[in-house]
Image (cartoon, rainbow, N blue to C red; front, side, top):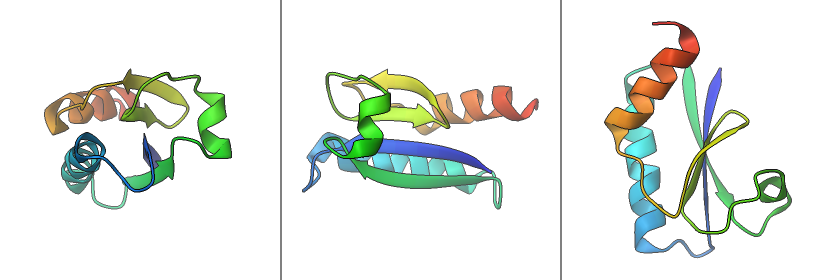
Length: 85
């Protein structure tokens, strides 16, 4: 199972909410293969990624973006690379 991690503040800002919506839209294209997890940018999980701005998006353990929203299409392309499709 591939995990898209969306890091943002609590409560979430507008861009972080948008990033989560885009991640969910991308995950819909891979039923049962991709899950989306919303995590607090100040939580212990965030320390492993060393990002400086939110939203931050990670695919499994790889940070893909910080300080910008990734469109669903961008995430889908990265997921396809990861699963070899």
